[in-house]
Length: 395
Image 1 (cartoon, rainbow, N blue to C red):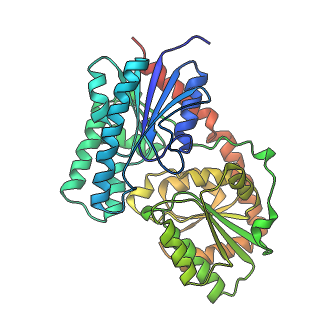
Image 2 (cartoon, one colour; image 1 turned 90 degrees about the vertical axis):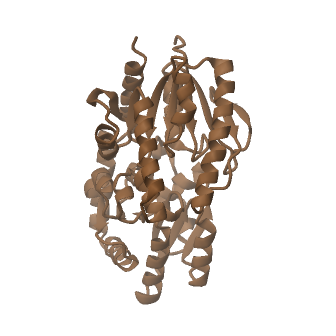
Image 3 (cartoon, rainbow, N blue to C red; image 1 turned 120 degrees about the vertical axis):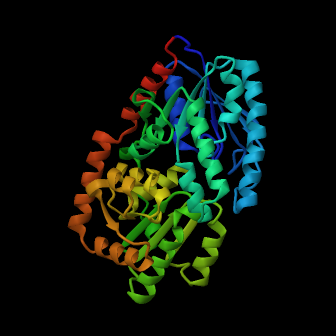
């Protein structure tokens, strides 16, 4: 396949290949004939400054600790911007990229892209999260910094030639707040690319119990994993459900606090928190679990998000329980039962009801898998990704 030129992808909140969306996009663009370079942070075990992996050139920069408050938030982004700009200059010198692909959050990466845009480089803005809503959910207030974030979002849209949105909600933001034209925005959904039929189960994960309830994802302020632990406490202590094992997989700023919370409640035998797991472990767990849960609480930020875990549960044909979020409901449809309030008791009651109804679980799992294969699979997203790049690079 002829070389189509170089693309530089900037991602700040996760390294590759750990960031599944960015890595799948990188591989799809590589397969389409582009030379792909990725700049990302050193974190979570990925600490090589340079790496050539599966035909993709990776540069990694130092970043301060993940933000736990406003000072940490600002420090993280300041350190990242400096590392990104330094490495972008190195990538420009070595590769002369034609496109710079910005993956938010934050919406400050336009500062790195702007000098290269002045040199004729095209800019693709890949909206992973609605950053103003994320900021408000994290700090539970608006104010001057919130409006600064809104300005940064608007400026990023202004710099971008093309916008990639993960769902209808972020597409609407690009149209309404970003001022982009209809034909400048493409929906490229995040969807797992997993050979589910080749994955074996692992009954040992159930610890001898009848049911396995699983969670996979980030463990930060906005992710609500504490609701899962509180729901487990309610089911075990109040409802006497000794037949349910919980497996909560993932890491993040709240991980150690969640372990302490579990231990304080005496739930070590009922709630496993293994941290970051291998793909083999994760896929076996998804294959084994009887029910997937999403604990992201109801708020304007989460309403805009398509959660990876929702699609991963569907890819494995698993029913799920989640708080009633707009994009969560759009993704899962009839494959889930929705909890209408941010309540661990309501979450626990719904988990118990779904586990006790095997016919409904089978039906939800089947419908979720069908919907995933027909509408939400990664192959459809790749088509949109390549159309977006074709439009961006038109003379």
